[in-house]
Length: 295
Figure (cartoon, rainbow, N blue to C red):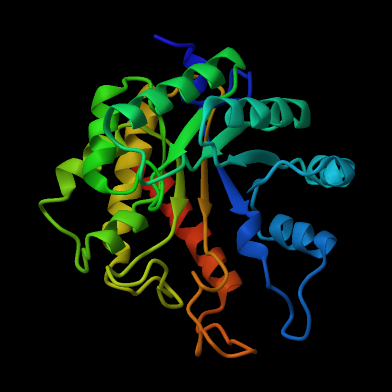
């Protein structure tokens, strides 16, 4: 068994396990007041005003690190670091940067979908060992185009690697499997993954598009399915949680081409959804899921 620190984020307190609703910095790309994109400072202000408690993004380059750290400290934000490793050495570099910057954890999209079977298992084990040696929590995101390309192979990896912890984003498997109204056949596979929940990225797919507008109050018919899955993941996390443990959950609503536009080929593309308002709605849904999971 490798160092258990990789399994969870912990704030080193004796407080009860808690939810940390973070915001993906990627989600803020292109957002503004209709006339211009919000500035760096305005984005931080908007995130804080909305009640988010952290940000997930790439570790800032050295020239930007001080500005980032100053703003994170000003708003008392946590920070999750992104990584796209192809080999242990790639992760080692990010781990060094993340530790120096003060990141809470590594969210890894492990490259790529053509690495399969024993090779993928060896890669994931190596990354887990690298993160454990650095005493940094490490979560592999369930994502298309990565070693976690599809539901079946990811379940195989989970079964083969007891220490593999996941950032859950089931939208990738819903769109890949065209699960337009959920699927009873998929439920046990999803459950295997949800038992390894260490973080959640909240997005809703309709089985044909990776990211859809769920309506002003979450009326989309796929919302109950996703909320049930998220709730199960939170419940499993709570069963293992220790004092001071933190569950990072965030709405991850990407800009085009994740965000659907009126014409993907037009010079001035107009998104068909208000991404910021949708992020605020997802935040409310996440809070509801958290409360339900504790009953």
